[in-house]
Length: 129
Image 1 (tube, rainbow, N blue to C red):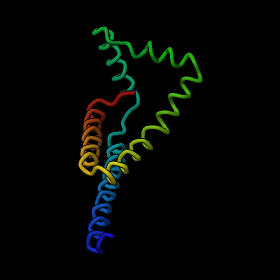
Image 2: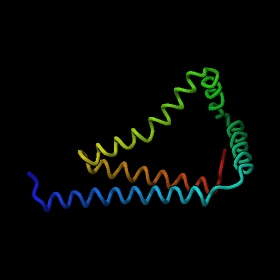
Image 3: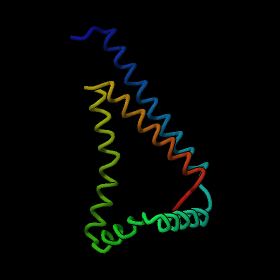
Image 4: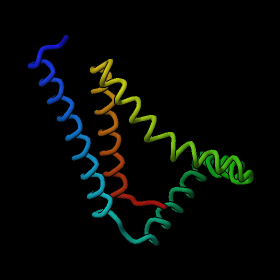
């Protein structure tokens, strides 16, 4: 049976992780508000990217989307997998790793934070729709 100091240290470590995640979520919300801009600019940027993809002959995404959107059930399935799969799976993986494989948890947490930060930079510099 764990000693009280050990239990206390584990509780403090878990509370610290929750605080880090809550702060990251608040930063995310703040960045979203601060970088929200003109939708016309975002659409124009998206069209520029599509033209660039076409010029580079890497415009495969539109064809794939058309195939999915042509089948309502497949589009609905994709939406549900994204909505109900991404965050719950990420949270479950984080909880499991935190409980069983702390080093891998830290790697996952940091990767999510770094990819989010990278996304913020691109979103702020080049908003797209």
